[in-house]
Image (cartoon, rainbow, N blue to C red):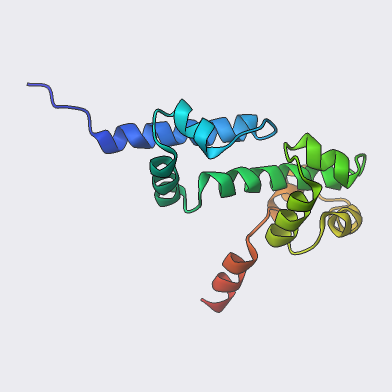
Length: 145
């Protein structure tokens, strides 16, 4: 007799699809309600389950992806901070700068200046790894452990 599919596994599959959608569409206007509708979940349920599975809320994950892409664009040096802000899907330069500073530890304009020197001569795969954003509070927790 066939067994019923595990609802937890179905939720995990939906969460993976949400995460993949965020990774693909980070530059588009995305919000938790739209992501939840696409996953056939309520926004609250999606937020709770996503955080349990991935350690951060869907919005936080989206902003981390946007900041990662912004860091790469700023390292290239051919775009202004404002251009990068809008290119990664942020609609407010203030929110972008605040979140960037929170994740990276310096404002985007300072990062752009510093990144030109910090990654000079490094292969792209190494530069990406060493410049990946880490939340300030997570870095402090890791340092204390």
